Length: 321
Image (cartoon, rainbow, N blue to C red; front, side, top):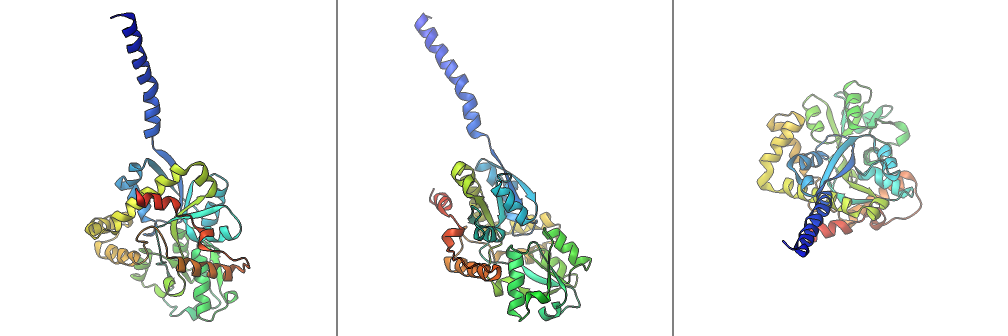
């Protein structure tokens, strides 16, 4: 082999050695931390998508962290958390001027139910009592206020207690610390079977958003691929969950996920399906109504549009690929 060929072959080998680590780096999954308020069926798509490999297919390695919605929003703004799933708490934060946006809707409509102690038969029976909510300014707290007002009850006549996470709200109801609380499937179906009373459905009173994907504006600017990967993974997941051909598999997953019998899992999933977004978006008119509810409840004079709350640009790119 002449000198020229030796140099050429050496250069090729050296090029491969240099290139291989960079190829590996590109294919390595992006680790992200995501806030979740509970393990309800509203949140289930995150766990299902992770277990099915839909996040891995988009080079995303999610770590789901449970904490209170207000704490999560503060952590996102501070750069200590990548994403939150609570679109309600995000709305309150945006109206206070924090730089975050909704980028995907897992839920288009609420499926939470106001559930009460067995002896309580109406919303009016809650006067003078304590109602548990995850946070006073998230979608759960907002829904509680709207339901009370719709029944002619001033919020000062009922104590709203921030329980931080759904597990605390359930324990509060079962230990009688609270007279009622708002819960999502399958907790509603489980507790109804034990004698707790359904007083009102949140979607009857307010089209509020509960679960989706929330990102900081800074993350969207500096790490658009991370946000894109998350949206793409959720898009894959929801398409699979919403496909009728996969219903039996999904219901079986729900049964295993929550340790329910199949009949109860089917009932809970049917209730949850009423709220899931079909394409990751929410009708503009419903978002506008939501804005007015928040402004009225929080006594905010400034006006807002859906464009102030959400950024669907990356979702559009995912849908168009």
